[in-house]
Image (tube, rainbow, N blue to C red):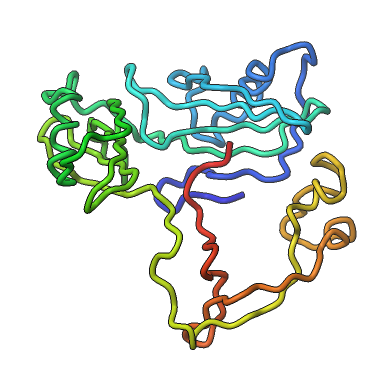
Length: 265
């Protein structure tokens, strides 16, 4: 289990193996059954109020059921909750972005989404026509403080071009967060003398695909412990030009960088 230091809410639950009742029920209904039974643990309301079903994705191994938190009709920023079910009617994994402290600070925004989009374009000095622009009003909650916010997603070409996410306070018009979501090739790299070839045991592409099995049994997370089934799927691979910095080798090179950028589907 992984827990938020800020809120104490469980962020990820591994190897849940929770048996579900009613095999004829839909994946959404089965997920809600689990969430109601574990509402206290996940800090949800007992009746799951404010939890909106967004999508159900079917995979060969089961289903991923995606929910999003809402407060008085407004979605909460980065509040996605995903329940993963296997084919044996068990919950096997949960990612929880629910924010129990989220509140609606204003009854209505004093700034429209169109006005917020103009503020975002001025902030980024957009002079060309954006090839993508989307706006939604959300509740942004951090460290127990909520603010009604216009989230502007905008893609454009120019000096600061990219695929940007701009958060504009819906009351004051302040831009309090701006992030380019683009993953760039050829960005800043370590000097050549700080890059080395290494080797490692890796899954290529992953143990389930390589073994041709579904998640579960021997092929499941064992609290980060090695198992014969999983280690049997490892191969040796060369890691070209990884970064050597401060006596440590980092899995960061000219072609790839590993970072956690979003909640799993």
